[in-house]
Image (spheres, rainbow over the protein chains, first blue to last red):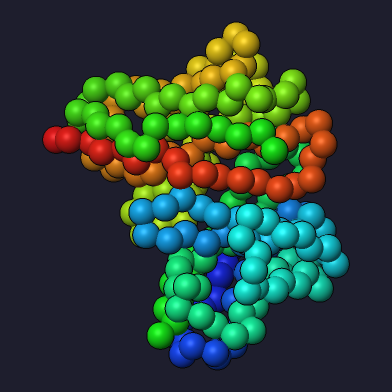
Length: 113
Length: 112
């Protein structure tokens, strides 16, 4: 099993450009999450999804959009990138029961110039 | 959302036990306590979780207070590879919206 796969691993954007980060999981998990992590800080929740076709806002959703058209994929979009969105982005997934653990991807390093 | 509070940083010597505390005074009866750690330049990984009883696995032990308002992650013999950020989070059982807030975590330094 590949687990949770994030693509791309690195990306450099210019201010105003758009891009989509892909998170794919092969464990048939219902829940999927997008977090960002800035230097010296913890993980902050951007958006999450509790199932195919559903999304919800997290702590810092502004400037991002998400879609979950297929159960295994959770896409994070930046429509007009800003330097403040320079960060490391992590995707995670899990089964519904709260005694189930989270699985994380290896992260995407995004720089917006 | 039930929140957790952890110290920003802790230090330990190699091969000594480490006790990482977490306060969760607003925990509800069906909330599970989860611990994750994040090694440098990696994604977080699962360490351990529990509900009421103390738990042990090959990585660590989890001691949960009787009133469940606090817990402690115990690394029995710290190694240099245990230097990481440790996160304590609650997975809410009563009204499970799926939302998961992590917070800052505790940065553990291990000295040789």
